[in-house]
Length: 346
Image 1 (cartoon, rainbow, N blue to C red):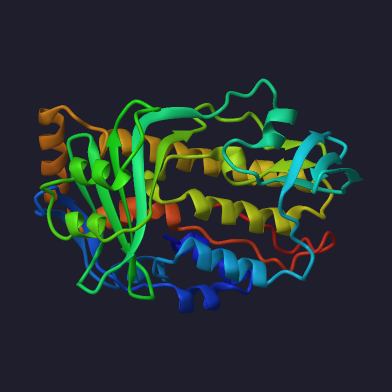
Image 2 (cartoon, rainbow, N blue to C red):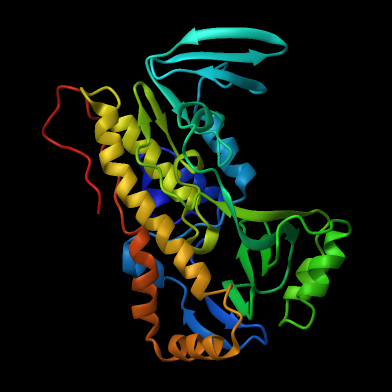
């Protein structure tokens, strides 16, 4: 789900319209109980009226295709394994069995939650920790009516996002210790969400391939995202839980800010100053919402949470959640000598 801040970043890169064409927007949504009773509901178009742009449900493969198509041929090299990185920009890696060494003006470690770059240059930083949640994910064709909604029960959550081509992305998440037994994941997730409201059981049954992950995040924030000529970006810097749907959107924010300031004197210092406080704030909020949302198991606490949601005006609830998406990127037309406009964080 690309939210308003992520879409604005794609607009700054000139890719907003292609993504919108491949995505699905203007849907209603909200939060339900496992029996289908609505706790909070947001009508179609409310998000756009609140923030000036809607959210887009887009298949990850479609987004990757659009991003890759904007690059010149030969820029992306896959299958490269990093061996060494220094703060001076020296990089050693292997590709097709050959060791390669190079020196870069800028090294961007955008290599995910298990970042090799972070491990090499931030050796004392805490690694990812499991949060005690197992998640299943799938994409399937669906011809019935759907809303972009999540459903909560004690210690479990199910979400669905309509896509543009008649398919739907769904996920189910439940409190569980990492490393549990694996096997027939359709049967496993189907059993966990058996008896939940329609169309949840049918969506699971209609899905051919179901992925399973034990969720993790970087619970201990990094003291800096930069080392010399090296900058961390996205999950490598601030891998967060998915409860706010902000992981990819924060990575896009990182990218446009880094692009705007990298060529300036002390540009990486500026990048760290602008990005670290906001991204770590969003990560903390996402973690807190997960604990107060789907991870709650105490029946009294669950009842209180649900009652609070039911009495909260929908627009107030939307504004509370949408404030993390209320961000605008800097202009990418900046040059090192142009000081009339500087990127700002909101």
